[in-house]
Amino acid sequence: MESTFVFVIIAVLATLGQAQFSPTLTVNSCTASTLQLTLDNAADGGIIYIQGQTSACKQTTSSASTVHEFDFASCGIAWASSFKMIVQKNALYQTGDDKQIPIMCIMDLTDLTVANNVNALDKDDDVGQNLTVKPTASMKLYRSGIDVAGSSVQLTDTLTMSIELDAEFQADFDIVAKDCTASTISIVNSACAADTDLFPDFTKPAPGYLSNSFGAFRTTDLNGGSVAMTFSCTLTVCQGSCAATTCPSGNGYGRKKRGISKRQANPAPAIDDISVGTTVTIAAEEVILQTPDDDTDVCMNRTGFIAGLILLIIALIIVLVTAVFMGRKYHEKKDALQKLNGGMTSVAMG
Image (tube, rainbow, N blue to C red):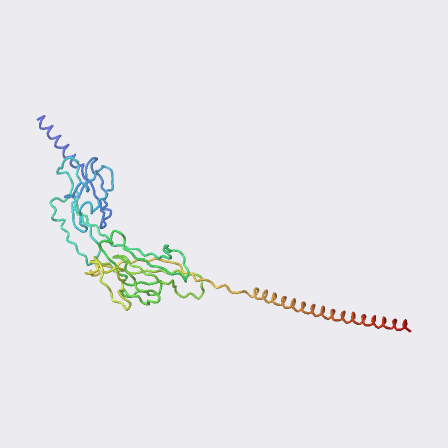
């Protein structure tokens, strides 16, 4: 009886030990290159890894809440495929207590379908976790290579618009600027520029990257001053290279500068739309006109100059008249002296 009682106690303790190991795994993010998850209630000195991969995908666990990141390239995991994440209580050996959690990352694209084979896994200790991810992009405005989004530029400036998929999506996806507006002005319709004189068609330096240079413009404001312009675009996302749109001036999304890549040779259909935008304030250069006071000063200066010139001429005339008068007086006195001297000489001779 005593040995049986001891055996029962050991069995109960073993059962309690098994119940205590119940780690919880939560997927935080899953991009085309990286998986990030939070692990709670695991064992100190245990391990977590992706089944069937190398030691590059193995990390040590802790009983505290910890964040783990796994690089898909290092682990050899194809994105949008299912795999097993193993949480092992002891790093040296496996037991039935170890947890196996199926995981799959799914792109949030309406026409993109991925087979979910988590049911084929032989041991699912947790409900399979499927994380949905939507591609993201950004729009920026540059003046002379400087980002001016959110700041002020002049109406005479040349701006460059850059639209780019975020880095984790560039390897697998492409974009087309489907429709764009500048506040209330339509600048792109159905992937073609609405007015190429105002806003030319986009060029495409690389997959997932659109660029365009244009002269700054704004909606009409009768009061002058500055006008805030909001530029926004609806982008069509493709898995692979997007198909070109024929426009009067060329391809709507723009042509690759150096030849056509293999990805462009077989364009993929559009599968979803996303939006991007930014704002810039556009100011008109003010032309400064002379005020009435300034005109009065100019007139006064001209009047003074003319009056001074007249006085100078009058002074010169007075000097000339005086010189002529004095010259005549001098000659008259000289003639009188000569006559007087001539009369005195005649008396002396008589």
